[in-house]
Image (tube, rainbow, N blue to C red; front, side, top):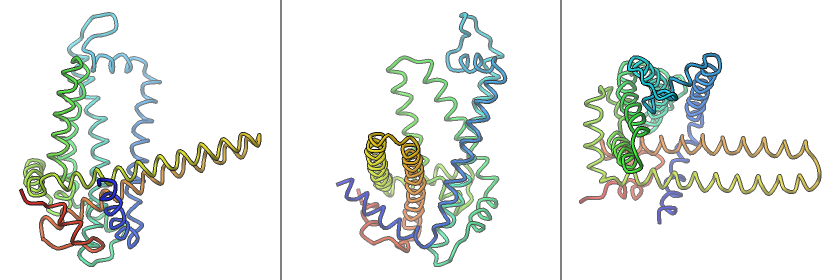
Length: 291
């Protein structure tokens, strides 16, 4: 049932994306930014070996020789927070830009990439404020999780999942209303209660569709490479591998874009009662079941 619903949501979200394919630029830029952050962290760890020891300290609380340094722990915690902050800022910024474009499309406008950046820039103070809150929660939960046993880690993961659910609508709320972190989370929880979690389930179903696409691409690539190797052609094998990798990246970009479009559609339907352009009444109504 979930997979059937997921395909229906994917099809309708695709209808919106077809009108504005340039919206895929934002997940691409977000991915590039994330890679840049990761590369910077790895390069810094390579150039400054002591950072590796400090990272171990942050998640374990002691150096490898058993000693503990409170100052070093605090400094490392700040560094971990900084990495989380940049990642959340990038994700929220480009998510806000994409959702803003989708909301403009739902209002009958023809958004451009420039419009997305314009709207995200207008919400930059709220984006940075929310990123600080999200980064603090993420960093704290991550550091606590690494210091606990199996049961404790499960509890922390459940707390993290509850936080993710509670903040599900934060990005479209920031994009459309420009609320600060406290009010955005409060409004997100209220909308989530209205949907009774069905909107979240719908996005999860959309994720299942993306996973199916991922598996199909991997399967096709493996089969193709197998026959290429049988033909003893290294160049052909590498070409097929590159094509398969590119296809996986495309699946991820499309799936991420469709999820944001669906989220924007849910937000618009929840706040206005109007069915967003490209979506059906049935899809939206199923996402807002009464108690």
